[in-house]
Length: 411
Image (cartoon, rainbow, N blue to C red; front, side, top):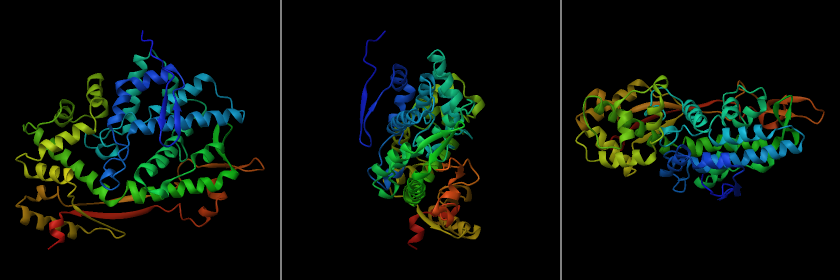
């Protein structure tokens, strides 16, 4: 047995020192499944817009765990009973909540595997870790799945005001330089409370909640849905789609073994056995980047062209507007692409496509943010907030985009 000191600290640029609370958490952080998150970017392709946005899921997971430690401390101070086992379950669940992310986070979620969400993969990886750690993650998995009777524990991990969102907004704002996303996580956590096993916020924290929701709305428009990072991620999914097509008709593409496995196989959730999970856990951003570099010189025009465009940040043109993009406009651009590059109609779809993006700061249909008023009554933040009376943060905003080669815009 290793005599390593397991009660270490990390120096984090956001919060200062983050402590590892126990040996289980240390061993989980040391596990290859978790160390892989050092090689998964937190903001996908956003570094093409914001050069500082090179932070990883590893950073984020540790930050979210640190906020959970603070939340447990605050709730205990307010006489909310949380046992040592429940505390460990909360810390483990938030630490591992993103462990199932694929390369470039959300960018390739539907390209590497078929119709499998990263939370489903996180759960599969957690269950395998639980087997390796002799059942020590059982309560954490129960909380993560929403099967534990104390509902506030799941709300701390996944809700409209959870430790995950608090960390990624503050962290992504810091690394990208988008100041509008910065939030006061300390204030928000100090306002936490629990009533009848439901998470609530003290009424005096209402302005911090409004700031949090506004910051989330602005971060989506300015960072996560920025048109340049959007088109880069779309192009990345197109590259993987083309690579899969070529591989499955017998073309052998130079790439890593884990990536080759997923190019060769259409893998759905039910097929994720131990072997497939091990292949997925070996896959990270570096597999994709090294493949793109190799594919730049491939004989297939689509694969080489898209790979070169991403590597050199010479991306497709993207127009975003409030109006729907007509089929006629798409067809017109595709016809021009067919002429300019001598492509078939099917091949032109790799260079011209449309879609839509949505942004909503607060979903009134989802589980509400509950406000504990001074008279001990509880109401939805909708009823308490002046901001929400204007409906500004409730509205689902939909925008439409079309992507096409820059050469067509110059014509």
